Length: 167
Image (tube, rainbow, N blue to C red; front, side, top):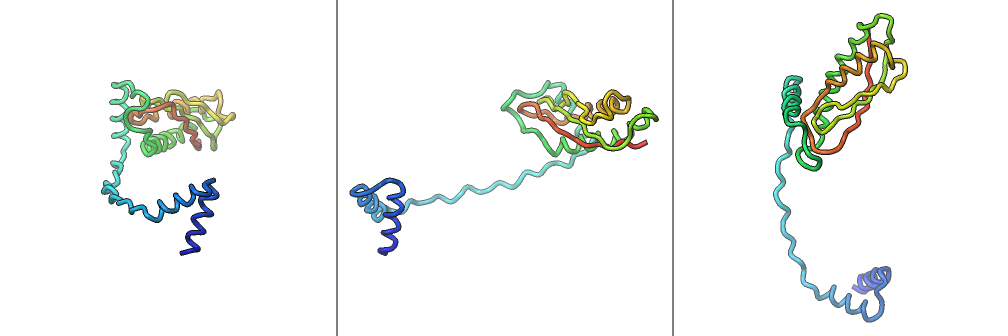
Protein backbone atom coordinates (compact mmCIF):
# COMPACT_ATOMS: atom_id res chain seq x y z
CA UNK A 1 0.00 0.00 0.00
CA UNK A 2 2.79 2.40 0.94
CA UNK A 3 4.69 1.50 -2.21
CA UNK A 4 1.62 2.27 -4.33
CA UNK A 5 1.16 5.64 -2.56
CA UNK A 6 4.82 6.52 -3.17
CA UNK A 7 4.45 5.47 -6.78
CA UNK A 8 1.43 7.79 -7.19
CA UNK A 9 3.34 10.68 -5.56
CA UNK A 10 6.29 10.12 -7.92
CA UNK A 11 3.88 10.13 -10.85
CA UNK A 12 2.31 13.39 -9.64
CA UNK A 13 5.76 14.95 -9.14
CA UNK A 14 6.60 14.15 -12.77
CA UNK A 15 3.43 15.96 -13.75
CA UNK A 16 4.47 18.95 -11.62
CA UNK A 17 1.87 18.47 -8.86
CA UNK A 18 3.40 18.76 -5.36
CA UNK A 19 2.52 19.65 -1.77
CA UNK A 20 -1.13 20.11 -0.78
CA UNK A 21 -2.29 19.70 -4.36
CA UNK A 22 -0.69 16.24 -4.48
CA UNK A 23 -2.36 15.28 -1.19
CA UNK A 24 -5.78 16.38 -2.46
CA UNK A 25 -5.27 14.57 -5.77
CA UNK A 26 -4.28 11.41 -3.92
CA UNK A 27 -7.36 11.77 -1.71
CA UNK A 28 -9.55 12.10 -4.80
CA UNK A 29 -7.95 9.08 -6.39
CA UNK A 30 -8.51 7.05 -3.25
CA UNK A 31 -12.14 8.06 -2.71
CA UNK A 32 -13.28 8.25 -6.30
CA UNK A 33 -16.02 5.89 -7.30
CA UNK A 34 -15.28 3.64 -10.22
CA UNK A 35 -16.60 4.97 -13.51
CA UNK A 36 -18.92 2.51 -15.20
CA UNK A 37 -17.69 1.58 -18.64
CA UNK A 38 -20.27 0.75 -21.28
CA UNK A 39 -19.63 -2.33 -23.38
CA UNK A 40 -18.32 -1.58 -26.86
CA UNK A 41 -20.89 -1.44 -29.65
CA UNK A 42 -21.30 -4.62 -31.66
CA UNK A 43 -18.89 -4.91 -34.55
CA UNK A 44 -20.50 -5.10 -37.95
CA UNK A 45 -19.28 -7.86 -40.24
CA UNK A 46 -16.46 -6.93 -42.57
CA UNK A 47 -17.68 -5.81 -45.96
CA UNK A 48 -16.37 -8.06 -48.68
CA UNK A 49 -15.49 -6.81 -52.09
CA UNK A 50 -17.60 -8.24 -54.90
CA UNK A 51 -15.58 -10.32 -57.35
CA UNK A 52 -14.16 -8.03 -60.01
CA UNK A 53 -14.39 -8.81 -63.67
CA UNK A 54 -13.31 -6.71 -66.60
CA UNK A 55 -16.96 -6.40 -67.60
CA UNK A 56 -17.97 -5.08 -64.15
CA UNK A 57 -15.10 -2.56 -64.30
CA UNK A 58 -16.17 -1.45 -67.79
CA UNK A 59 -19.76 -0.90 -66.61
CA UNK A 60 -18.56 1.02 -63.53
CA UNK A 61 -16.30 3.18 -65.70
CA UNK A 62 -19.11 3.98 -68.11
CA UNK A 63 -21.47 4.95 -65.28
CA UNK A 64 -18.72 7.14 -63.81
CA UNK A 65 -18.24 8.91 -67.13
CA UNK A 66 -21.96 9.73 -67.25
CA UNK A 67 -21.83 11.25 -63.74
CA UNK A 68 -18.57 13.10 -64.35
CA UNK A 69 -16.93 11.94 -61.09
CA UNK A 70 -17.63 12.93 -57.50
CA UNK A 71 -16.92 15.98 -55.37
CA UNK A 72 -13.84 15.79 -53.15
CA UNK A 73 -14.72 14.50 -49.68
CA UNK A 74 -17.97 12.81 -50.74
CA UNK A 75 -18.55 9.26 -51.88
CA UNK A 76 -16.35 6.15 -51.73
CA UNK A 77 -12.59 6.23 -51.36
CA UNK A 78 -10.16 5.29 -54.12
CA UNK A 79 -10.71 1.58 -54.77
CA UNK A 80 -7.24 -0.01 -54.74
CA UNK A 81 -8.61 -3.46 -55.56
CA UNK A 82 -10.41 -2.23 -58.67
CA UNK A 83 -7.35 -0.20 -59.67
CA UNK A 84 -5.10 -3.24 -59.33
CA UNK A 85 -7.47 -5.37 -61.42
CA UNK A 86 -7.78 -2.71 -64.12
CA UNK A 87 -4.04 -2.01 -64.24
CA UNK A 88 -3.20 -5.74 -64.32
CA UNK A 89 -5.54 -6.17 -67.30
CA UNK A 90 -3.87 -3.20 -69.02
CA UNK A 91 -0.45 -4.72 -68.28
CA UNK A 92 -1.50 -7.94 -70.03
CA UNK A 93 -2.69 -5.94 -73.06
CA UNK A 94 0.48 -3.80 -73.10
CA UNK A 95 2.58 -6.97 -73.34
CA UNK A 96 1.42 -7.27 -76.97
CA UNK A 97 2.55 -3.73 -77.92
CA UNK A 98 5.85 -5.21 -79.14
CA UNK A 99 4.01 -6.39 -82.25
CA UNK A 100 3.23 -2.78 -83.26
CA UNK A 101 6.81 -2.08 -84.29
CA UNK A 102 9.13 -5.05 -84.99
CA UNK A 103 12.23 -2.84 -84.64
CA UNK A 104 10.98 -1.19 -81.42
CA UNK A 105 12.32 -1.88 -77.92
CA UNK A 106 11.33 -4.97 -75.92
CA UNK A 107 11.75 -5.92 -72.27
CA UNK A 108 10.72 -4.23 -69.04
CA UNK A 109 9.67 -0.67 -68.44
CA UNK A 110 7.61 1.49 -66.12
CA UNK A 111 4.69 3.86 -66.67
CA UNK A 112 2.95 6.35 -64.35
CA UNK A 113 -0.85 6.67 -64.36
CA UNK A 114 -2.77 9.60 -62.87
CA UNK A 115 -6.34 8.76 -61.81
CA UNK A 116 -8.96 11.53 -61.61
CA UNK A 117 -12.01 11.35 -59.29
CA UNK A 118 -14.10 10.29 -62.31
CA UNK A 119 -12.22 6.97 -62.24
CA UNK A 120 -10.61 7.68 -65.60
CA UNK A 121 -6.87 7.79 -66.11
CA UNK A 122 -6.28 11.49 -66.66
CA UNK A 123 -2.78 11.06 -68.03
CA UNK A 124 0.00 8.54 -68.50
CA UNK A 125 3.74 9.15 -68.55
CA UNK A 126 6.52 6.84 -69.67
CA UNK A 127 9.14 6.50 -66.94
CA UNK A 128 11.46 4.27 -69.00
CA UNK A 129 13.52 6.36 -71.44
CA UNK A 130 14.09 3.58 -73.97
CA UNK A 131 10.33 3.42 -74.69
CA UNK A 132 9.87 7.21 -75.00
CA UNK A 133 8.96 8.54 -78.46
CA UNK A 134 8.58 5.06 -79.98
CA UNK A 135 5.52 3.38 -81.49
CA UNK A 136 5.81 0.68 -78.83
CA UNK A 137 5.87 3.26 -76.03
CA UNK A 138 2.91 5.14 -77.53
CA UNK A 139 0.98 1.87 -77.65
CA UNK A 140 1.76 1.19 -73.98
CA UNK A 141 0.63 4.68 -72.95
CA UNK A 142 -2.61 4.30 -74.93
CA UNK A 143 -3.35 0.92 -73.33
CA UNK A 144 -2.81 2.24 -69.79
CA UNK A 145 -4.91 5.32 -70.57
CA UNK A 146 -7.93 2.97 -70.82
CA UNK A 147 -7.42 1.52 -67.30
CA UNK A 148 -10.43 3.03 -65.54
CA UNK A 149 -12.05 2.31 -62.17
CA UNK A 150 -15.35 3.30 -60.49
CA UNK A 151 -15.54 7.01 -59.56
CA UNK A 152 -14.18 7.96 -56.14
CA UNK A 153 -14.08 11.01 -53.88
CA UNK A 154 -10.79 12.77 -53.48
CA UNK A 155 -7.78 14.15 -55.22
CA UNK A 156 -5.66 12.80 -58.07
CA UNK A 157 -4.00 9.43 -57.38
CA UNK A 158 -0.61 8.62 -58.92
CA UNK A 159 0.25 4.97 -59.63
CA UNK A 160 3.52 3.62 -61.04
CA UNK A 161 3.35 0.26 -62.79
CA UNK A 162 5.96 -1.94 -64.40
CA UNK A 163 5.33 -3.75 -67.70
CA UNK A 164 7.10 -6.16 -70.01
CA UNK A 165 7.01 -5.97 -73.80
CA UNK A 166 7.22 -9.18 -75.82
CA UNK A 167 7.20 -9.85 -79.56
